[in-house]
Length: 194
Image (cartoon, rainbow, N blue to C red; front, side, top):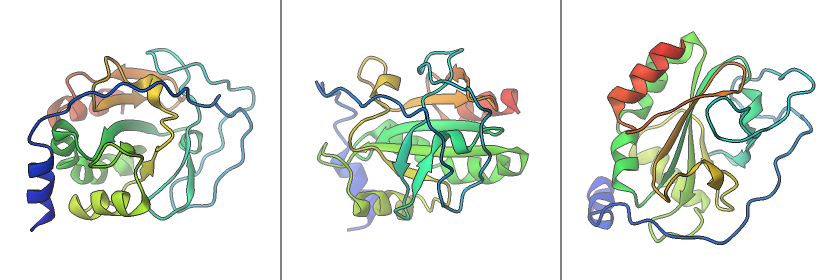
């Protein structure tokens, strides 16, 4: 059975929210540039994480990417970053992923990064490396896709609804929460920030 058909069958019920009682760990303040293939830029000293609300410095998420390398959100200081917090079972997440690679390619030369943060697999469990690989292959993604099985970015989720899509400015400050997150509203927000 083709993977797209499998995704469609498993997500036919829509994005049913689930409640969790786990508390994410405190954000990391120290800076050590990770070794990976993504653009690196060291943030200025003294930068402190604040939260996921518009106008706040986003926490420095440190999660493994599709290659098993640690990626730190703050390594993208100086770039406009779209954070797409998704699950494999979520139909709106899948619809947004359809345009993710084209969006990444269209704007990356202007200092843009498309960052997918995957919190659950098709069964609602923490994503395993093979789940991330399935997502990357299904949507032919070359942008960073991160596994967030511990839900360190849970505070970015509003009303238990996926996807949560945040646009982060070049200064690591949350510029906009894109709602509703569609290919069109995402591109409009990116163009406004670039």
